Length: 197
Image 1: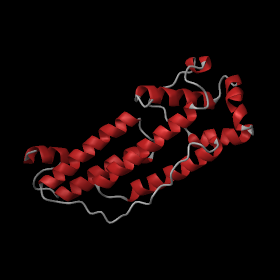
Image 2 (image 1 turned 30 degrees about the vertical axis):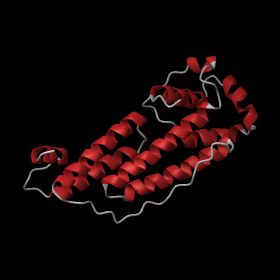
Image 3 (image 1 turned 135 degrees about the horizontal axis):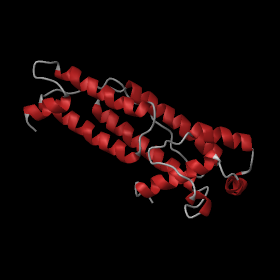
Image 4 (image 1 turned 180 degrees about the vertical axis):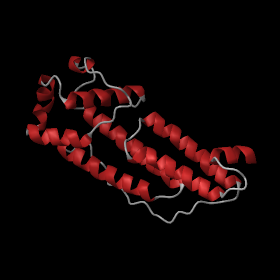
């Protein structure tokens, strides 16, 4: 990497405050994860950009401040009931987003994006376990990779259904326009597209 490449990555000129430009870029990347969760491949592409950003800062002999220690997330247990899983998922997501909001360096951001990717993978597999991807009803559901899964809505609907988990898949199959069907179809599509299976 040469000086002009580093300045281009940092999006600044030589006379500008290089560290400030780095912080601005980190802030810009953090925002991509705080509102909605992008698809996994986009998160991985952003991680590569952050890595280049770190190398550009390092080129000038600068190191980012890392005054915030991210809070740890709990281990998600896929064997718990779907309702408990969704609750645990939301708790972990809240911790990750709190950490994202508070970190100031690229290395921590890359690590938190890894946590977010793993959290998404676990969610996709848990949802796909409710109905098989080969289930005919899922083939008629239209969803995009860019559609996010509203876990709060799933949890709320599940509480309203008030059904035992073994009967959940049967109940969902009978609901043609259920958000559960859309979420499960999306999870299966994510697993296939990102080659997670």
